Image (cartoon, rainbow, N blue to C red; front, side, top):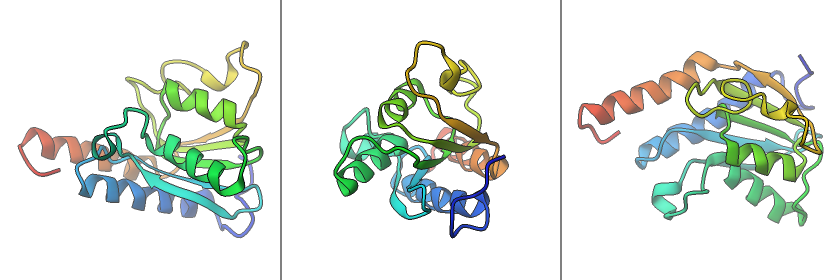
Length: 162
C-alpha cells in the first residue's frame, strides 16, 4: 500500500472527510457518496458529495464535482499526482474523468458490484487502451462506507426521508 499523503496519518483520516460529505449528501436526499481530492503534497483541494438531484445534473457525482472544483482552483484540467478518496467505487463516467484529469491515486471505500469499474465490473485503471494509469487503494473504511449506503436505501424503501 502506498504511504498516506504528507500531513495525513493514514488513508482512514482522508476517508473520514469523504464520509462527512456522504452524510451531508444523504441529509439532502442525495445518494450518500462523498469524495475529497488532495494534492500530492496533501493539501485539500476539494470536497463534495453527490448532487445530481439537487443540481439537476446527471454528471454531478461526488468524484466529478471534486475534479471540477480542484481544476478551477489550480487553473488546469490536469491534476497530476492528486489523490482522490471516494466512499464508493467509481462508475465508468468518473473513471473517464479521472483518467483525463491524470489523477495519481484513487482511494475508495465500498465496492459497487453493480456499476463499479475499478475492480467490480471492469479492471478500469488497467484497461490497455487508456493512456494514463493510476494506483488504487481499496477497502478503506469499507464497512462504514457501505453501511451509509445500505441504511440510506433501507430508509428509502421504508418511505423515510432518507
